[in-house]
Amino acid sequence: MTEQLLLQQIQEIQPLDQESMNQASAHLDQLTKPQGSLGKLESLAIQLAGITGTQAPLLERRSVIVMAADHGIASEGVSAYPAEVTPQMLLNMLHGGAAVNVLARQASAHVVCVDIGVNADIEHPRLHSRSIRKGTANMAEGPAMSRDEAVRAIRTGMEIAADEVRRGTSLFVTGELGIGNTTASAALISALTGLPPARVVGRGTGLDDAGVHRKTEAIRRSLERNRCDATDPVGVLAAVGGLEIGGLAGVILGAALHQCPVMLDGFISAAAALLAVRLAPACAAYMIASHQSDEKGHAAVLEQLGLQPMLQLDMRLGEGTGGVLALHLVDAANRIMREMATFASAGVAGASGEVPQ
Image (cartoon, rainbow, N blue to C red; front, side):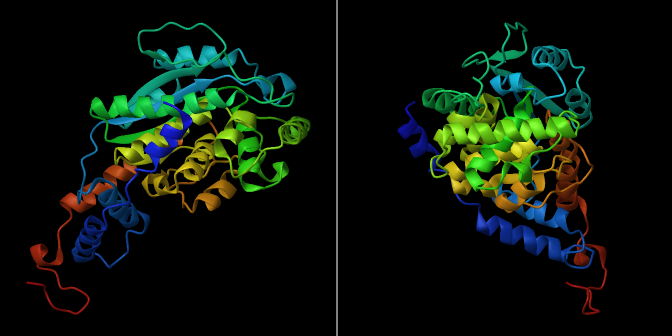
């Protein structure tokens, strides 16, 4: 698929079903509670109805798509961990030992691991091997990848989403793995929004103050070297992004094309979401912000996306962990819609003092 065909396809994303949203809102107002008293759970229920066209969708198969890739910028000392951790953690995840595996089991979610650019040869029966290149180049010295590779990353994410829909997935969670990816995310966000690097750079894997300064300078040099055009999202991804960021943007776009909700995890997922929205603004309606992470720039990106986080737990692990935790809120919203009594069915007087017939 050429870049032009990809851009044409994602323009086919449909708006939410307003009639289903109206019906869900009316039903919520009939339940035995003050109107709006369940706050974000009610907003979530209405959004899910609009996405799926169903008042209380079951969303039984939930897939956490973990895109894994390495980053050439890691050679600039922007992480507290060496690049070798990426393939090691990917194997740990494939064996079920990572935090996202534990939380996904609790939430009855399925973890899908995708090698889209890890700088190692990994074989495992459950690994989706879709490597585009063995990690990006050092963006402080030139473009992270070619434009064709950037398009392929987005397309790969869309293909993974389509494959999972064929397997019965009805809800997606974004996850990622890759040493150096908060640096690439911050650079991409800065390039797309004009926010200064210092505004969006955080401690990532646990950098000290000197490490944060080094990371900020690496991003500043990358932006200066590559001269990104904010009106060209694919070009920005190629210049200062990451393969897993492009892949996750593709997952988001693919989920929206198939009218599936997509639960965003943290900072890297938000960078991918921003890229997706710049490519196809209609996909924003399909996004749910699971939490606001402890990473410095996450709140700023959520503001750019117009999203309110469901949770705030001071997390900064990534992997999709925050997104999986928020699946329990999806279940709660849907159970409220399906199981809670109305004023009429319970024989309870409403705000007017009368029992509805």
